[in-house]
Length: 298
Image (cartoon, rainbow, N blue to C red; front, top):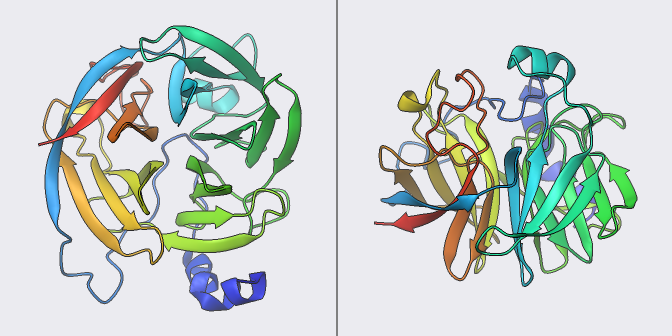
């Protein structure tokens, strides 16, 4: 699909309705049911979470799985964002990508220039960190911490394509959970041409969009409601058909589950991370702040 065909397929109409909001790591996107089946809830089930191990010190807000282990993307808040969260200014603005084994042992650290990282992918020999604060965009970094490229999410202003809350690498393609576009965008990682677009699942009580993960031809995404504290939060999972964008099912988390941010698939199990900070909440309000955990369907 060419860019012209992509634009005429309908994304332009969605962009015309979009309103920019501040680039915080879990900012809200507009909600409202859409589509011909908007009044019909997809099939649903429930899930619980099981703690696995603590992330390296910091705020983990993106994960990716490779044969070498689990990659964790570090999020830092600085400037106005640090002030809003009542956090001290970080001594260094560098945000790390940590490779750990499945016991949490640190194996490798890749330094990146990403800002307020809110998702990551690993593929093609590179770490892809997606920023949710200026200068926004996708940072491509090699395994020796050398920056390779920094490009904005396609179909936006040249210098600010908006923030991002998730990414995944699959079959040589990069998927980006774009807040400005309000959907999951597949791009060619070399040309950055947009190839396919899946609008975010929308329902009145599901307005926050987070990490994405691949599952045998489908894509899982974390979605949540606006809330003021952990006890009010109602996250869920949404599964899309990666070829059509159709919503296949939703999964509600039982009370007491961890606060999910990043998402990845490992040995048939979804893995997530609890960043420890969440807009509107007291810091570390979640009892599993900083933990990596497994998601189990029940």
